[in-house]
Image (tube, rainbow over all chains, first blue to last red; front, side, top):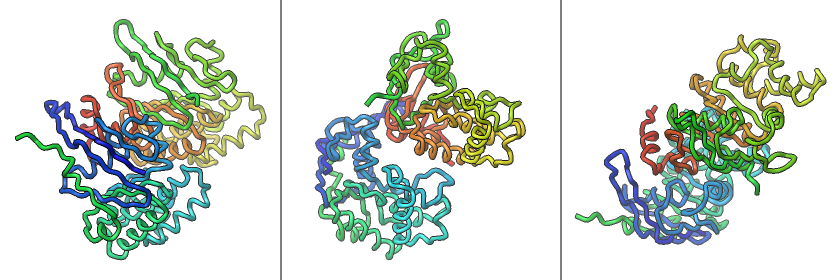
Length: 227
Length: 256
């Protein structure tokens, strides 16, 4: 489902003496449907960078990134938007929403976007929020004022609202208590069971062992700095 | 699929000065495009060329008209262009007073655009005006008040109601949230996002506020000195800017 082939990337900082920072070289990775692959490596090794490249959030200098039939590395913005709508979901570490929008609408949005009618989308959002232990009295409030853990759970509910065939998870279990962590792990397992291809970053070793088939160490893709 | 708007090498010069130079892009139905850049970068000049307010010196702006498909709006006759301006196009000005009639009631402001497309039944027009005032969160009992009695945020929402009442397909917006305080801004952004999705609107939004484009725009175009220096998916341009000027712009935003 997801296939990364010989991908490289460097950042050029024009306003800081045109410093060129190579961050990734010859990265390759494949994830089949129903499989969960963990990205591992020290902080700064490029786990999130690789994930953002797969999502089309960062440009790719060379190589191919196939998600389904689309090469994200060479796709037009319009194609990437369509891919994100129907195929590729992303749960980031931080929730980013329009202020003043109710939590229920935030979670239902991916469903509304893909043509589910309002009542149905809200019903599904309620099921997810209940499962993730967000108290009902908070549903009509904007999540911007929630605690870190609550925001993270709203973010997860939103990411799992639409059954994307491919999912990117950036630290989905960080800042969660044990009960909610179990719930999230169960949701990931269910997503795998319905055939989703998942790439995840988990600092939580036990979570990684529980749900991931394989780990890929991104340190292998970090360019060696010439001394 | 035919694009709704096809902009082909549009340039506008003020004497020897460059207004905007060689701008091309396609916009499809339901897409929102943001144009950012500092003051004087040519964003508003470009928007005015696209909306038919200023004729560009060279280039074509083709719009997918309901009757005849793609037509160049630069070379079409003035009456045809004006017809587009009050049916399929809408223009939201930065200052609401430029887009409203300040000495006509709120209901009259919304109704005028309906009458311009041949609505004649007073009851229907008033009913529609009430419906739209409600959608932009203006209380029904303010319908007979003049916009001069409204706050800045309310004026801006009234301007949006007036523009959208005829069900346009393409909306041009020039700094729609400029000059509004942040709480009003958030409310307006939420409103615009909802309307864009419900009505499958396409929009071109000129702003210098990067947070606004991140929330509203699918695609982003960065301008400097009349030239487009970078285009792409909004979050990609903001998170992984390639051009030196975009990097400067993104890194200059103050964190709250």
